[in-house]
Amino acid sequence: MQLYTRSSGTGLPVVLLHAFPLSSAMWLAQREGLAKACRVITPDLRGFGGSRLGDDDPSIDLMADDVAGLLDDEGIDRAVVGGLSMGGYVTMAFCRRHPDRVLGVILADTKAGADPPAARDNRERIAQAALSDGSGVLVDEVLPGLIGPTTKERRAMVFGRVKGLVQSAPPGAVAWAQRAMAARTDSFDTLSALKVPLLVVVGEEDELSPPPDAEAMARAVPDGRLEIIPKAGHLSAVEQPEAFNAAVAEFLRTELGGSQR
Image (cartoon, rainbow, N blue to C red; front, side, top):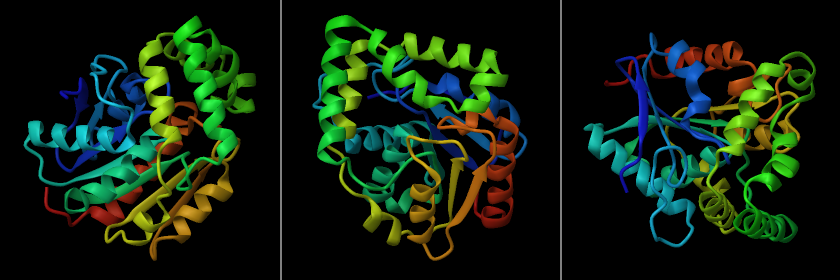
């Protein structure tokens, strides 16, 4: 599976994986703001944006293998790999399946635990609704939880941009990704086995993957670093890009400044 990718900058490769049900378009401010510090690589995960869905069964592991294939295509041996929400699930699967290719890890607004049964059932309900009725269910039920109250009150353009990305999500990809996320395994063992630096980022107002989930992930790694982004909800990188970029740039400078590029 060849993933459509947007990139900017040079130097240390940093792969950022987008949230559900968005695309790599969500990383615009990171491609612009981090390009001086690293080579920012933002693929569309399968089925979203410019990437095909294919005929494979839903699987977060398969999405992680797609990212490994992207590194092969780009001629990159090892990279910093990070993701927000669904992108974080794919990042943890990548760490489990391709540990020798990871220089560092960034997990934003995500969680390491598997879905409880009620959450899995809800994902299947949304998958079926998307296939039968289109993206309306996403606007009604998913969009409100993606953005924090501060952004809703003060940054209407950000909310509008996110709504547009949600509305453009293909129903087939929505259903596939929901089923892939529902079937994912617990990743705390993967985190505890990490031998590279970890940055965990979370929006202070994130209700989908709240700060206690982020704290648990940071504690799972001996030197895990936690950054809480004020006035941000679940899409911290989109809602407060300057603060998000500053946390990532500092992490790269202090933890990976000596890495081979």
